[in-house]
Every structure is written in C-alpha cells, then in structure tokens.
Image 1 (cartoon, rainbow, N blue to C red):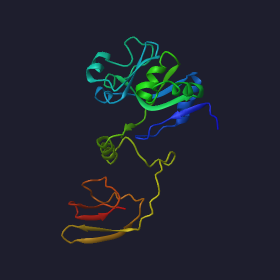
Image 2 (cartoon, rainbow, N blue to C red):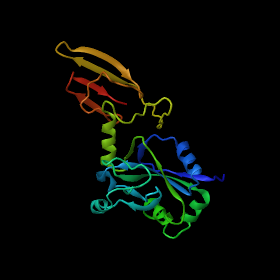
Image 3 (cartoon, rainbow, N blue to C red):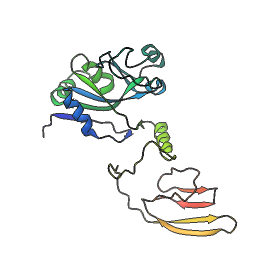
Image 4 (cartoon, rainbow, N blue to C red):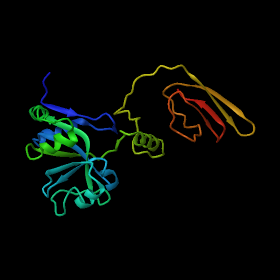
Length: 235
C-alpha cells in the first residue's frame, strides 16, 4: 500500500510519544523531512546528532556525535538573537532523537543516492539545502538505551520514587511479549519472631511491600534482601 508519509523509528530508545502530533506538524509546515529533537546537556550531546539552526529557526546543519571541543566551538544550537525560543542554558544543544518523518517522494530520492546508508551521518546532512527539513520539539522523557551501560542506568532510574517515566499508563500502555511461566513461592520472614508470609507471584505483580537491595531484577532470578530477611523468586 502506498503512503504519503513514512515514519522512521529507532529500536533502542525509551519514550512515549503521540506520533500523530509529529506527523501533523510535518504536514502543517509543508516539510519534506521532520526530525524529532529535544534539548540536551553538553555531556550528552557528544553521543548524539546535534541540530543547528539559523536565527529564523530553520535547520542549517546537522552534526553526528561532535567532539567535546567541537561543541565548545558551537556553544549552542540556536544562536543569540534568534526569533525562536532557545533552550535553557543548562541544555544548550538540540539533539536528534532518531525519529523522522519523510514525505514519500523525498524518501525515495534520498535512498537512491550513493552512500545513503545512515540517517544521522549521511542522509540528513545531505538533505539540508536540498529539502525543507524541520524539527519537532519533544518535551517528554526520552533515553537512548543502545549500550549496556545506558540500558542498565535507565532501568535503575525507573525504579526510583518519582521516576521520570512509567510503563503503567492506562491511556498509553506499552506492551511486551507474553510469558506464561508457572507461579513461584514468596516467603517473608520478619524480625526475631520470624513470622512467615507466603504467597504466589504471577508475571504482572507489584511487590511494594518487599524490601529490596537491588530493586530491578531479571526474570527467573532469586535474590535475598538483608532487610527483613526476605527471600523471593521473580518470574
């Protein structure tokens, strides 16, 4: 089936976005290409694709993973005196989220070009000056979990009180593959009297009452918490 617009997504990011707003912005601005972007710190910018604008808010450059020295030279994504609102000083760079909307004919054209294998390094930079490339500012939580370290850090952050992102949103649920494992036993031993609390755990449980030293555990792992001497097995 032929479509007029194509949404290009990455598979190693954690966020929740209404793509309808992104596509509507692409259509309303008569853009050929729209990339989602959000403000980032200089520490994060060196690992991402950085967008640069002119004073009218049009994208004029795209640099994939610039060095720290290069970022100090750039200073900010939106220059001083621009007619558009600049990000706050602590997040002076606008980073591409790896989320793109392409109009059909433009996408076919850029993919037919020689060496067009990477969106950040080749396709987007080559499109500047040839096509109307706009940005879409995303203000929600977004994390790149493409490395072991970033994946681990994102998981730990989500276990903390007041975490910036939640999977449990009844209006916008995030699904995963089903796992039909047998139930597992739960024992809780309290203090010197060693009261026992037993039960069964299913895959979808929330054990807020269990004290945990390492709150995020993989499926099938047995852990021991020294606080309250709680043993449990997670499915």
